[in-house]
Length: 373
Image 1 (cartoon, helix red, strand yellow):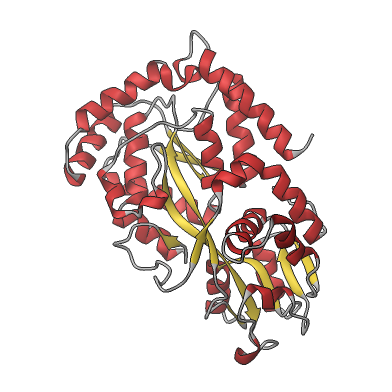
Image 2: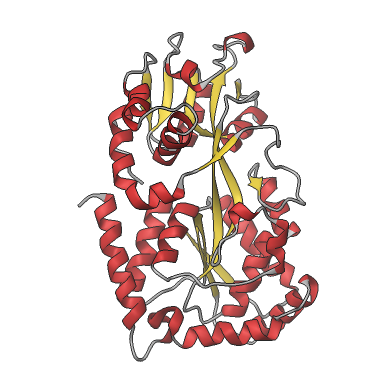
């Protein structure tokens, strides 16, 4: 079964589980069950409070909730672990306990769907790709919420039931020993026709590809979809498939490739900080960005702690922690955002939600490898 069909089948079952549920498990009944009233009760007690008073009240309410608060996240362990530890410390309470489960985005999505199907959801909050949050939202597995902290975020990363925590910005990168400053391509058309060195292309970056086709080559350059896809399939460049952005960054640093397509800015910044001969500035524009977001899960037995965690991750304290990992924060009061003069295209989430399999298939024809999670 294809990844897309598998997700669709899980989505259908999750929707059924959310609608029907188990008569003995309020969490299995989804956002319209007893858990919704639990969220409503918490929200009624913090309504109208400013950020500080809201936090203090949520800590009090969280201390009354039993069990261990559980977060599912796609951040790597050495980032998610200190975030969870700092969250608990930020509450100033010895009664709030928290743990986390870490997985890649595709495995995370399937796990959440399978738990919903089984009527046994485990996560109280989730941190993952915005495209996957869109799927979970459509399945009514996320809890709508209001928070005064979101006023510090740009409007394009705030949804009714999730909010952006950090930005992943896709960029072209290059090996500075092989490609000198004056030799770096100026446009994406130049990149696709670059022949001086092989180009590593990351095989899972199908959302970057879909956005470049629809929002750059089609919307801005006036191409048809067929012409836009042909710009990639007929490229003169020697595009070599690489599975994983970290792997691509390592191979680029080692001089295996002159250029890298599908790297994240933070991957290259980290490598450069460690002494690798790599760069991405000045960028080939447009860059493509996709937020990773946080959401409270519908059906959580710990709604106050879930809301407290969401507020923490979006707050100045949580966002400074995010920025310390070379990630691009979404809170506009925290340094580290992309310069405003850079041209940036957001991932076409509507297109990815409707036609993900189409774009993974098209991208696999270009990379020569299946774009699997």
